[in-house]
Image (cartoon, rainbow, N blue to C red; front, side, top):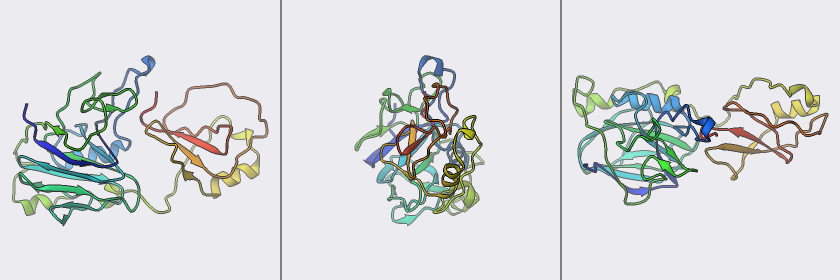
Length: 266
């Protein structure tokens, strides 16, 4: 197996992810997969991959890598400063890299994650129908965990076809709309659907929920996001029966915080 990709610096948290593994939650197996599946799909299509090909999910930047052969790359996600040998690579743009070229992710100005697709895809073993890394259970992806400095990964075959025909300049000019590839905003509008317990909160609490700011706590991970903010009280503080939640559910706990479920749910 040829190792085409060399990780010079792995950054804060970089892992191999695809669209995740489905059909195993009843056995306690997380779906895993890219936290923004749309961003992953767009990046993959830009480089000519199948939309669900395995790619790199980069959290908070710091990633540096290079290849030992030619590849086409594209990324989508937060407001990162990404460079190819000191040349800027905006989100949603393709770049044709030659052997030895270095790609570097700086720290994000907006958002915290990006998805980097590489022509051919990341060639790691398929486990339970997916190449995604389950970071809690330590399986899948590359050796079951986050990438480390010095790791070497194998890539799928670079299929030079009509999709890839043309010069480097022509390839670089193919782009996706900006609102597709970098949706992070300083002041986004988050829409929600009322849950079955909505009426158990008093009006002042509901007003605070829709008007005041919440901050993502450091006590967050790919399983869920903990939000710190104003205390939100129910009219009835009796215990609620534990129940299953859908992706994106915001259940209130008994502290001054809320939880939001994310992709690596169980």
